[in-house]
Amino acid sequence: MQLVDYLDLTPEQREQLLDIEVTPEQKDFSGDIASALYGLVGLSEDAVRGFALLVEGVPLAFLLIKRGQMLAPWAHAQAATLNALQVDYRQQGRGLGRACLAELPAAVAKVWPQVIRLELSVDAGNEAALGLYTAMGWVDQGEAYKGRVGFERRMVLGL
Image 1 (cartoon, rainbow, N blue to C red):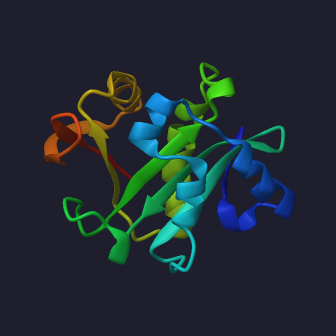
Image 2 (tube, helix red, strand yellow; image 1 turned 45 degrees about the vertical axis):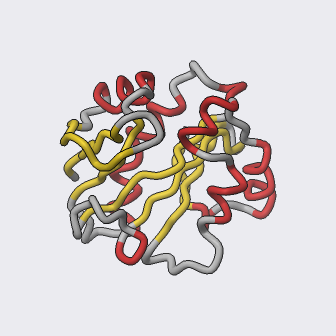
Protein backbone atom coordinates (compact mmCIF):
# COMPACT_ATOMS: atom_id res chain seq x y z
CA MET A 1 0.00 0.00 0.00
CA GLN A 2 1.23 3.44 -0.88
CA LEU A 3 -0.27 6.93 -0.44
CA VAL A 4 0.38 8.79 -3.71
CA ASP A 5 -0.14 12.45 -4.63
CA TYR A 6 -2.96 12.86 -7.16
CA LEU A 7 -0.49 14.72 -9.39
CA ASP A 8 1.65 11.57 -9.62
CA LEU A 9 -1.18 9.22 -10.61
CA THR A 10 -1.32 7.84 -14.13
CA PRO A 11 -4.30 8.77 -16.32
CA GLU A 12 -5.63 5.23 -15.78
CA GLN A 13 -5.35 5.54 -11.99
CA ARG A 14 -7.13 8.91 -12.09
CA GLU A 15 -9.96 7.25 -13.99
CA GLN A 16 -10.04 4.38 -11.48
CA LEU A 17 -10.62 6.88 -8.66
CA LEU A 18 -14.17 7.22 -9.97
CA ASP A 19 -14.77 3.59 -8.91
CA ILE A 20 -14.35 4.47 -5.21
CA GLU A 21 -17.74 4.31 -3.52
CA VAL A 22 -18.78 4.91 0.07
CA THR A 23 -22.01 3.87 1.76
CA PRO A 24 -24.88 6.38 1.91
CA GLU A 25 -24.24 6.83 5.64
CA GLN A 26 -20.55 7.53 5.04
CA LYS A 27 -21.40 9.97 2.27
CA ASP A 28 -23.06 12.15 4.93
CA PHE A 29 -19.67 12.44 6.65
CA SER A 30 -17.15 12.48 3.78
CA GLY A 31 -19.04 13.27 0.59
CA ASP A 32 -18.36 11.16 -2.47
CA ILE A 33 -15.41 10.82 -4.81
CA ALA A 34 -16.90 13.16 -7.42
CA SER A 35 -17.19 15.99 -4.91
CA ALA A 36 -13.69 15.31 -3.56
CA LEU A 37 -12.16 15.41 -7.03
CA TYR A 38 -14.12 18.55 -7.83
CA GLY A 39 -12.38 20.07 -4.79
CA LEU A 40 -9.12 19.93 -6.77
CA VAL A 41 -10.41 21.78 -9.85
CA GLY A 42 -9.00 25.24 -10.41
CA LEU A 43 -7.29 25.52 -7.03
CA SER A 44 -3.62 26.08 -6.39
CA GLU A 45 -1.46 23.07 -5.49
CA ASP A 46 -0.35 25.22 -2.56
CA ALA A 47 -3.94 25.30 -1.19
CA VAL A 48 -5.31 21.79 -1.77
CA ARG A 49 -3.84 18.41 -2.63
CA GLY A 50 -5.39 15.02 -3.20
CA PHE A 51 -3.86 11.67 -2.24
CA ALA A 52 -4.87 8.17 -3.28
CA LEU A 53 -4.01 4.98 -1.47
CA LEU A 54 -2.81 2.48 -4.06
CA VAL A 55 -3.11 -1.24 -3.45
CA GLU A 56 -1.31 -3.21 -6.15
CA GLY A 57 -1.39 -0.06 -8.27
CA VAL A 58 -5.16 0.51 -7.95
CA PRO A 59 -6.59 3.44 -5.93
CA LEU A 60 -8.92 2.14 -3.21
CA ALA A 61 -9.02 5.21 -0.93
CA PHE A 62 -8.75 8.95 -1.38
CA LEU A 63 -8.40 12.07 0.76
CA LEU A 64 -7.84 15.80 0.47
CA ILE A 65 -5.57 18.06 2.47
CA LYS A 66 -6.05 21.82 2.55
CA ARG A 67 -4.13 24.82 3.81
CA GLY A 68 -3.68 28.54 3.23
CA GLN A 69 -6.70 30.10 1.53
CA MET A 70 -8.62 26.81 1.86
CA LEU A 71 -7.91 26.36 5.57
CA ALA A 72 -10.96 26.06 7.83
CA PRO A 73 -11.49 29.05 10.14
CA TRP A 74 -11.05 26.88 13.24
CA ALA A 75 -7.66 25.53 12.14
CA HIS A 76 -4.23 26.80 13.18
CA ALA A 77 -2.57 29.02 10.55
CA GLN A 78 0.37 26.61 10.10
CA ALA A 79 -1.81 23.51 9.88
CA ALA A 80 -3.19 21.50 7.00
CA THR A 81 -6.63 19.97 7.36
CA LEU A 82 -7.63 16.45 6.41
CA ASN A 83 -10.84 16.34 4.39
CA ALA A 84 -13.01 13.82 2.54
CA LEU A 85 -11.24 10.62 3.64
CA GLN A 86 -12.97 7.89 1.64
CA VAL A 87 -12.29 4.17 1.54
CA ASP A 88 -14.17 2.15 -1.04
CA TYR A 89 -16.94 0.37 0.85
CA ARG A 90 -16.09 -2.96 -0.82
CA GLN A 91 -12.57 -2.75 0.64
CA GLN A 92 -13.40 -1.61 4.17
CA GLY A 93 -12.12 -3.65 7.08
CA ARG A 94 -8.71 -4.18 5.47
CA GLY A 95 -6.91 -1.35 7.30
CA LEU A 96 -6.91 1.06 4.35
CA GLY A 97 -8.08 4.04 6.40
CA ARG A 98 -5.40 3.29 8.96
CA ALA A 99 -2.80 3.05 6.16
CA CYS A 100 -3.86 6.45 4.80
CA LEU A 101 -3.48 8.03 8.24
CA ALA A 102 -0.15 6.32 8.86
CA GLU A 103 1.37 7.62 5.61
CA LEU A 104 -0.26 11.06 5.68
CA PRO A 105 2.32 12.89 7.86
CA ALA A 106 5.19 11.98 5.52
CA ALA A 107 3.11 12.83 2.45
CA VAL A 108 2.23 16.26 3.85
CA ALA A 109 5.83 16.94 4.89
CA LYS A 110 6.96 16.15 1.35
CA VAL A 111 4.56 18.56 -0.40
CA TRP A 112 4.25 21.24 2.31
CA PRO A 113 7.27 21.09 4.65
CA GLN A 114 6.19 24.29 6.41
CA VAL A 115 3.07 22.64 7.86
CA ILE A 116 3.58 21.89 11.57
CA ARG A 117 0.43 19.89 12.28
CA LEU A 118 -2.60 18.22 10.78
CA GLU A 119 -6.13 18.99 11.91
CA LEU A 120 -9.57 17.67 11.10
CA SER A 121 -13.12 18.02 12.27
CA VAL A 122 -15.26 14.95 12.74
CA ASP A 123 -18.93 14.58 13.51
CA ALA A 124 -19.32 13.79 17.20
CA GLY A 125 -21.61 10.90 16.21
CA ASN A 126 -19.08 9.29 13.88
CA GLU A 127 -17.77 6.85 16.48
CA ALA A 128 -15.86 4.71 13.99
CA ALA A 129 -13.87 7.69 12.73
CA LEU A 130 -13.27 9.06 16.24
CA GLY A 131 -11.93 5.67 17.33
CA LEU A 132 -9.65 5.39 14.31
CA TYR A 133 -8.22 8.91 14.66
CA THR A 134 -7.61 8.44 18.38
CA ALA A 135 -5.91 5.08 17.80
CA MET A 136 -3.65 6.75 15.21
CA GLY A 137 -2.46 9.40 17.68
CA TRP A 138 -4.80 12.28 16.89
CA VAL A 139 -5.74 14.31 19.98
CA ASP A 140 -9.23 15.68 20.60
CA GLN A 141 -9.02 19.46 21.00
CA GLY A 142 -12.70 20.04 21.70
CA GLU A 143 -15.50 21.52 19.69
CA ALA A 144 -14.83 23.02 16.27
CA TYR A 145 -18.32 24.17 15.25
CA LYS A 146 -21.97 23.17 15.19
CA GLY A 147 -22.32 20.21 12.85
CA ARG A 148 -25.27 18.26 11.54
CA VAL A 149 -25.34 16.12 14.71
CA GLY A 150 -24.26 18.21 17.68
CA PHE A 151 -20.82 19.74 17.53
CA GLU A 152 -17.96 18.63 15.36
CA ARG A 153 -14.88 17.52 17.27
CA ARG A 154 -11.56 19.09 16.29
CA MET A 155 -8.62 16.70 16.31
CA VAL A 156 -4.91 17.47 15.94
CA LEU A 157 -1.80 15.50 15.03
CA GLY A 158 1.59 17.17 15.42
CA LEU A 159 4.15 16.64 12.66
